Length: 492
Image (cartoon, rainbow, N blue to C red; front, side, top):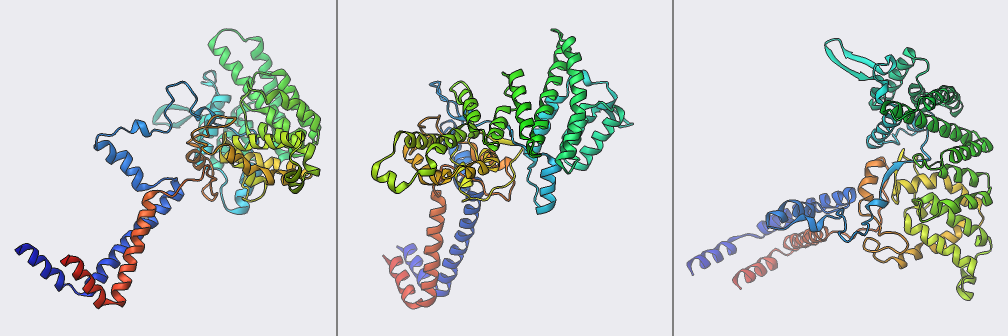
């Protein structure tokens, strides 16, 4: 009773200013937490408090984080979608010197992230350098007279973050060996500011690598060293021919580009490393050779081949082309869809289910940026790469974008729970957003699918901030009434 009496006296002695300060401070602190939570949610797609609770507090209470691991493999043997969520080389990647660096100088923003460029460096070292190159002067240099370790020049060139240093090291390797194809590839990709100059350098490299490949084929055996040399030469040979085809495509020489790509696919039908078939499909569409595109697509739009945005959306475009010109949503709603229109709509739904990020770019609801050197299948990076080159092809087919605009959102009624079950494909992968944030530059707003609900802790802090702010305002305006109210609450 004495403690209760003392507590009541203490509360009655508090002035309205104290309550204003208390509620104002609470409102201010909860507001800061709200701002931080919202920033963290927009940047990382999750609640900071929730993440800390699950990763640190929940295990201390005896829980296991295995049941919350969204990337765990389903023990029933069913794919969990991670297999469909792979980072791969972008078949439409631009030339760094002639395109990426020119854009960076023009707009003052670097279109490539360090993560993306590091993946490219790893690819180039794997493709164009092998153990047999050790000891060659164009591949070796001593870092210091006091350090006995020897590093590969071209490996250092690929790993170097500074473009000028990469070019300098490639020039150093080329000075030691004028026939160093690896150095020529780097210089063609990064030094020259026009596609014509790039093509000229690649043609020089092509002659050298063609001769090297012929020699390695003659000496090809079951010797591991000879196998490594042969694999390196064939990778360089295919890479250079494909880039020459892309130079021809950019310079408007579509017949030459199509010829080179068709020869590559015919000579190396089982090599899908560089996804040359996607470049050929794009060239067919640019040349408006729709029959050739359809015939070629029939092979790759098969269950045995991995899907991509190019495969799915090109199939949708070719079917839309048959009906889009005369399509009217008002007429279709009255009489229903005929067989051709139904086939086109189903193809659009199939494409949107595979990659739901593409339509906003094709419909110009979101701004496009330069595509990255690597893409994530079914992710925003793949959508940007596809739309960057194929938007013109959709515009070239009259009515195709109108049909897409009228039908693409209907896909989401077919898959109301995209992360739990799919319709024509595996459920949409969980990890696309985080990987895309690594691949895409910071100035780009990453497209997120499905849209995440606002976390509970953001709602809670918002309510807490609003409530304490309201109490502070009422206490400041009506001090006597709020003081008597608090006394009644404490007395009760």
